Image 1 (tube, rainbow, N blue to C red):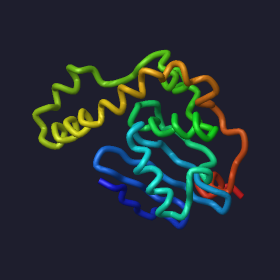
Image 2 (spheres, helix red, strand yellow; image 1 turned 60 degrees about the vertical axis):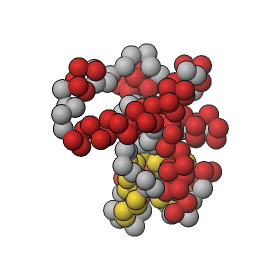
Image 3 (cartoon, helix red, strand yellow; image 1 turned 45 degrees about the vertical axis):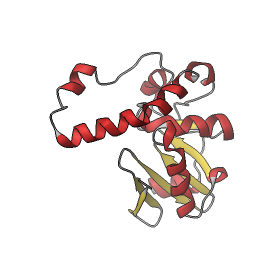
Image 4 (cartoon, helix red, strand yellow; image 1 turned 120 degrees about the vertical axis):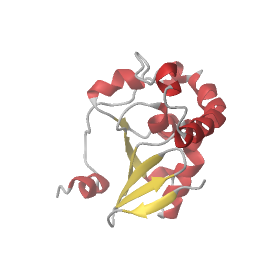
Length: 165
């Protein structure tokens, strides 16, 4: 499913697919992504940028709400390929670097399998798993300079998000 964009404000747009969502905060000098989908979500993330008239080089930063793979997969590509800074809370840096994992256990997932919506979602995730796990093999070798735990300077997209002048 191609991403569906919903304007929250003139500068904040919510992108949603059947599996994940992210937020785009736009400004005169570019875009900040809040979360970035699975590694396999890159075409959808790029399509959402294009729909708003932006491209890859317009992404000024990515802010992760937390370090689950469905939130930061495409952030890896942006950071590695384009040097895009990736920010998260200091408590999530170790999680993003896979020094530890916080995720649902197989037993916790199985406890919800009886729910039709949960089952459909799980099957869709499994269909995307090869893209996730293939990427994960090189994960540890490629994380060196990010994520960063503090924002160093504000762009106009940040000011649009925060209301700061």
